[in-house]
Length: 77
Image (cartoon, rainbow, N blue to C red; front, side, top):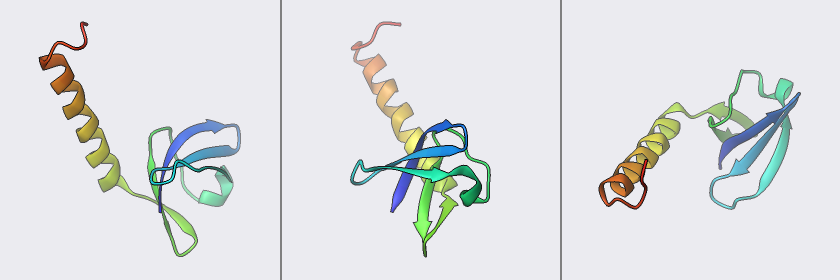
């Protein structure tokens, strides 16, 4: 399962399941690594790991969508 870091509230990391939109909370210390909003985490054998490849893929996809919207003049900056 893949999760997006929605926000960090003190020692709590709020994660959104990318596939089901389920929201879960995880203690920051339980992750064992630093996270920031927007990171993508994958649950592997009960442990979360950073998924940098998925994060880059999603950022590129969003950038392409924004570029398309700008070209079609849906947004005016």
